[in-house]
Image (cartoon, rainbow, N blue to C red):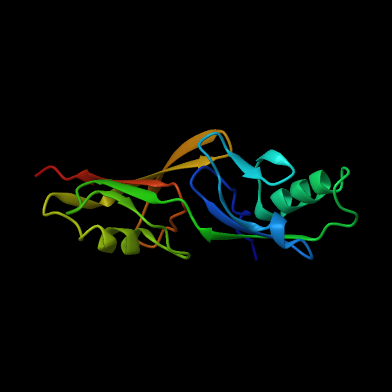
Length: 156
């Protein structure tokens, strides 16, 4: 059984941070366009490209550099960055990501295929860390936050 790769934070993700026993250090924060989160005491901390547990560990390490002893930090994603759907759908654009989403769900959100859509010629552009990749997709392919789905036109 293969496990899915860990979700990587990026610009547009909204996080809930809890520092146990320190109410003033927690709250809701958004990953900015450069991949950083601005936190009390710590200042800017890199989140872009990190898994949630890696960001927790990074924040814990920063808090333990003179602020807290044995800091206990919990981070959860409360709003994922949006995905985009382009091409031959009725309402192309930006849509909120829903956990477990497939291409079929994304097309339904975008009002379905147009009459010119080639349903077997769909591609997803994803970004893993700093690398972008373009892969063919079918209706059951999983969509990730930040993905760009393109539905191509069929030719008669």
